[in-house]
Picture (spheres, rainbow, N blue to C red):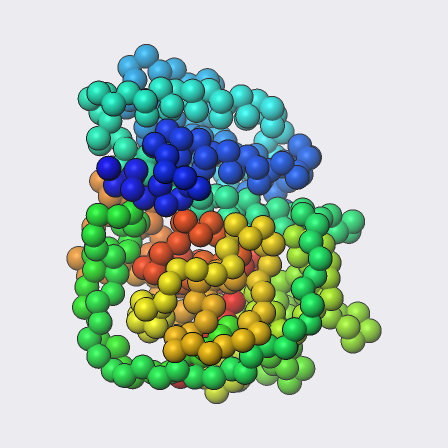
Length: 427
């Protein structure tokens, strides 16, 4: 069994060949768009958000550009202009339409984009079924990257449409869901870890992105990690104690950003007559103080940690604590798309390490010792963003479970708030 076959078999409900797994992931993307109207799929509510139909097309462009162009001499693009419209940031692959203007693309229509997907899928399945193809072994590794890349965009479809809907006074609902009951959260406690030399990063034959490699030794001083995520109620106490008015808790850049943009709480929180509510993909709901806080920037997470007389963990501390933990939790497969409260804790290891919310770390996004980017245009996938970003770990309620692993490194600029990002404390 190839690396791709062994990896993607875990991503599907039953043992499948590569072609069937390709279809399963592609269909999963389209199912995420089923609750949306064509009008929903066209909106770009801010530069960081892409229209849903752009995600549908870009993930298709990836396979067309990096697989089909080298797989078949007779392959012809459905529309050569798509190479400009749906290239995200790969300079070696040609010019790109400006990211902040993707919402101006009223054409191609959503129906034409689905035609584009069918066109590329036809040729991709033809390639995947040809076991004797001369380029198959080399290109299967690219297909593997492309499938994980598509899962990343599945999460982006959810995070982006949430921001789009939040801007609409009608407060549209992506998927109805009853709010969870106000269950009491377990007490926040601390788990101690001794100092030591630890193996960090990814080795082995199973899939990882290039920036998770190579595995290397890292000395980690003794530390303590919170047994659970920070809750909305705990964050509300920070707000009520003047957290957004007291500069002593804030990094200088964070204070300037918060003042300039008027932050007074996490993204999607609002307050009327002393009652707080939060916008979710199931509509606006009363704030549950026991659920994990999410949609906070690195600046807010760091300020809250200082107010708590604690700090954010480094990504190395996080990985040390996560290594004994099974990759399980509240992921996108639950189809709730909102973090859940932890009502019971009796384990030896921290809870909520995976799923619910991406956890900010204090680590700047940088290369591991000995890092080598992929060759060619795919070398632009991760490495060129190693500047002005911070690492997040653990996945979220919008992340496909099969996409997650202990060594996974997500990264965003410190002001980013539209992702499902939350807080775990260390000291």
